[in-house]
Image (cartoon, rainbow, N blue to C red; front, side):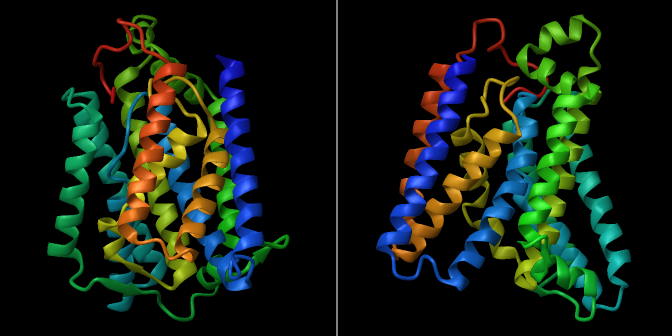
Length: 325
């Protein structure tokens, strides 16, 4: 299986490089500075969200509320800042909101035994509806002026890299260390590989699930900060887009197994590269939104089918358990 996963990563990376080269040679506007900046921004946001989703999927869960968390928490932050609240104070409130969302999802999944896919789907609807009803009223929230570090995060350079990409790279390194060098990371892999065996051996499965969803929500909050800094605002219409399915496409296409216990940051990186180039190329080709969604859905379906063959669940581990998709 290790060879098959490595082969999948290699194929995805090769496809991404080939696609980039083809687009660069055949599309007049692909290599322009403006388009490359747009590509960098989209790749960084997808990648950051993919890291959070990947961590949860490795633990045999799924978080369909990530985009709602990102949109609502940052829209609330920007709304408070426009109303006169100090920006750092508003960010602290948004941070606490993200933690509360993660706690609510994790508790429902771990302690109420509600499947993650239904919990997070409903949670996303609740978050977005509550945000529009009680936290802000307009669709687009603009960033405050005069916050130097926030402007630098959106438009600055770090060692020659645009800050959104640098933020993605730093977070990827931290998540890789978390998964590979800490007890928490080993617990996630053990719980994802076989929850029943992990529980029998004394692993604190329920608290672990809750922490996973808190981390996922905080990563969504961070993605929102980077997005707002890069585009000088946050549009609530992002929630109604297909971004959450793009994030799933990044994770599954990159090679993280939906059966849990397999995959890592490297899979997110190659998946992000391919999906980012694909979406950018389809936009330049002026492919209609509906056709783009059809193409992405077919690719996602194919990736799920491939995953089911490469990483099949046996009868025991396919049974529903806490946090199971």
